Image 1 (cartoon, helix red, strand yellow):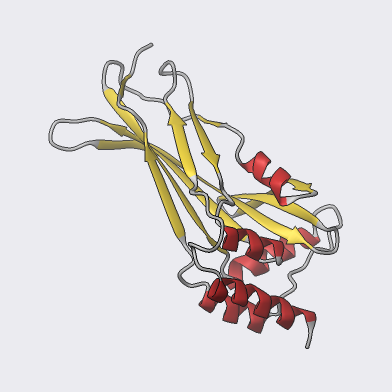
Image 2 (image 1 turned 30 degrees about the horizontal axis):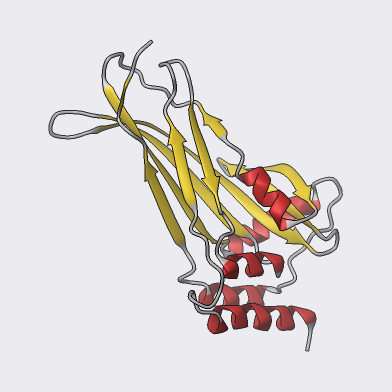
Length: 210
């Protein structure tokens, strides 16, 4: 049996055989701190991004994981609150078996940016979980605001995986390629159809001051 097929069977076995009670789980946690002034930036932090044991094993098997972030700024109104602005970004983690390293890629507006490669999943996770400052400041002095911080974790689609692999081939001469053929990836994505996890955090309400 080819290695790609063996890898898929092992990964699918992880999903089918491991219950949430039997496998170690640590819930993903989000934090968002409001800016100290209207000209400042909010600070967002995530922890335990790979707290789910099945997700860790899938990434270690070579299946890329997508972390899509959204930060929204809401102004408190009378009957309704108003969305004043938002920022979206995505981070992708993929194991490169040829280099035996974990690569972190950022995707924004359809463009990919290499954020580096790491010897272990733990060091890649530490990079992903560093506090990040997002420029999304209130516009109305004296008004009350709050932030909504959301994260969606899921496996990449087949088309996204193809885009990532084509891009990686041109990055620093990388020879990284998925261990899965197109048919295997389609099969695995169908099995992973429910493997989307969504998390959210709302900040405390604050008043915008200069």
